[in-house]
Image 1 (cartoon, rainbow, N blue to C red):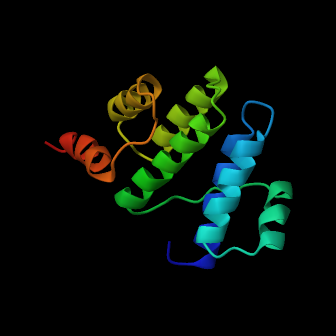
Image 2 (tube, one colour):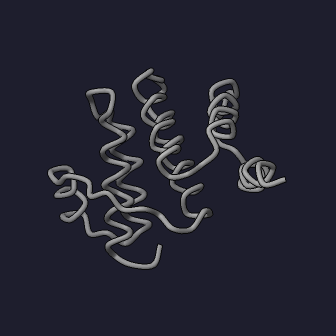
Image 3 (cartoon, helix red, strand yellow):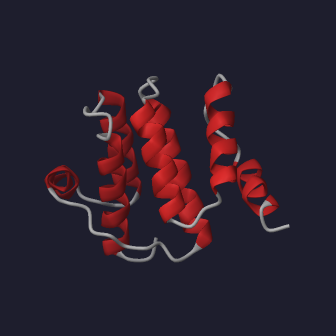
Length: 133
């Protein structure tokens, strides 16, 4: 993330995704707070983001798009409840970001079937790089 605006847009997208099932779980809110803290977003600004609409901004770097997809995937699993609306939304967001739908499906299945939804960064990147071969 290079600019403050990019960081804000990242959080706005994550906030919008976290409420796609109609509610914001406490663990989702806490996770979003951790991300905001890591991005050096002040708490007052973070709270205010829940009352803003998300602007449409394209993430240019493929690596950043993969990171954002993975953050959203973790957010989807953080409350321990997988909603169909969340799955549909993350697939659509990923397609809009230009990520390979088959790779997305593979990673989401991997996260769903493992006891821990976290995937090692090297594994995640290697799955995405397979599509280039």
